[in-house]
Image 1 (cartoon, rainbow, N blue to C red):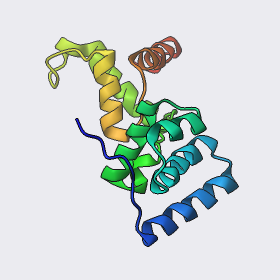
Image 2 (cartoon, rainbow, N blue to C red; image 1 turned 120 degrees about the horizontal axis):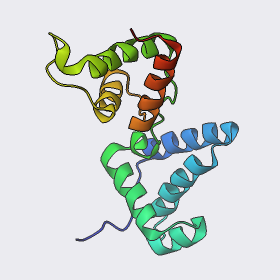
Image 3 (cartoon, one colour; image 1 turned 180 degrees about the horizontal axis):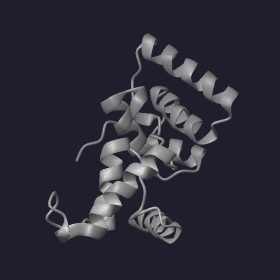
Length: 150
């Protein structure tokens, strides 16, 4: 597989990246600034091993950042952030889903029991919140102990 060695930025892309970096420095987002610095260094035709050495990251990581920037632009190097908590309304909705889990085969609407993994996938598809199956299990067990699930 041949790798593109450098990212060549247009003046518009360069000014957009500089503005983004300025905003990050005000917010003290060190790890995100590293990604921007890698793009800047690549634009200056520095080889990836040198960039990796200066930023104290692996060459594989630098290649990944450059690939993401080429594919998606600035949106590719901004890490996605997922909310970690559910609102009370979302928990109530999850408890309805967990009732499907508990009732399972006895329910007229649903013919199979949901696993905690399936509930975690449902939460992600519905609200774009990543929770582990263990966290789902914990929420359901807490609700059962409080008597919130009939």
